[in-house]
Length: 440
Ligand code: SAH
Ligand code: SF4
Image 1: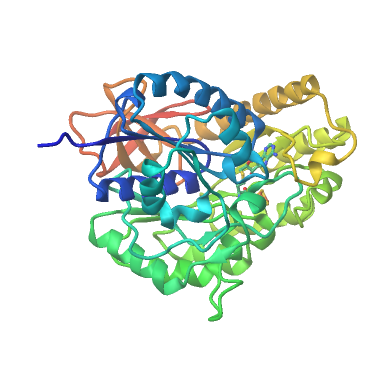
Image 2 (image 1 turned 90 degrees about the vertical axis):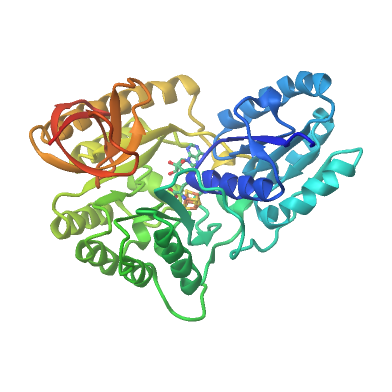
């Protein structure tokens, strides 16, 4: 009998990419391949890339250099570069020329054609490139889910917002919502298969449905899905503050299975910078939204993203960002150094900030946030929290770890807790990024 062929996928970037990799894995397994953890043991080797920041791109290029040796050692290995990075103008051609050992270069739009592309690449003598825009498949794609209890479900693809720093609309195309009935069916099926937690994915979930004939908005979709019995937790990402309506806040407040966690990327605390970023809201509007949320969902957590060093960001602008961080008191903030992306409006704006200054600012912002996160988490000491157990802790295998409804990770000592069970723990130690609990 012929030995079973193996595949290895490395994934960079956002949850949508994690999901896309689950689809790639699904296709490969339906073609008879099995996963393998070492790159060198794979017959098909895939890197699913991100384009949001320059740093990721540099990592990819150096990785492809190391694959040259791999290819020399195993000429039969099929090498695939996938995802957003290759969708950028001129990138696929650049890679094809610089790394001729690559067999297939494909963008996220052609995910539905992956099996055909693999077949084509396995017969071709040169690199097969497919980065044209097209419609993504929605139904009946074989997905190899990474977990047995949590699943990602895309509700829309692409983005129409054109925030001036962001490459996503260029690489993932315009926003396209999946029909609500199709999403509902998928979630219902997942729940029947034992999934307890669903995360609805989109670049801007709050603008869901704008492009659909039959008028359904994100709040309607959330209400529909929350009625699926047996579904314990619903999460969604990412939210755009501008499109987060009161109706949506009230839906989250009303439906017990929608988690009390709001990830609301603010990006900057300065109205001038927000306007240059084309975000479509002001700091006052954002504070109002936070107010509405906290009134309706009192014990919720709120997290955010900030970009420091956007072109033209002055000390005063940065002070405004720090001010918002202190005023809102986020549970966590994911802070990024602004990275100019070719083709975006901000990349050619005047007054680009030097990297030293950017680094200084991110360190200051991270420090401020760590203190706040720590203080907020301290308030959880002695409280009881419902956890969905994800497995053994990565850092200390005596511990299990699980996530609270508010999306905080808690490590706790227990005998044998099966992955995916729901337990209640008491919080006995609180740090900025993790909590420890004891089972009760
Ligand atoms: N659609 C999501 C995800 C976008 S990318 C959203 O709107 O939030 C995730 C985060 O990366 C963004 O929130 C932003 O903070 C950051 N980001 C995007 N482009 C960036 C860039 N050019 N430089 C630095 N950070 C960036
Ligand atoms: Fe990028 Fe803005 Fe769209 Fe998010 S909303 S993907 S930051 S353009």
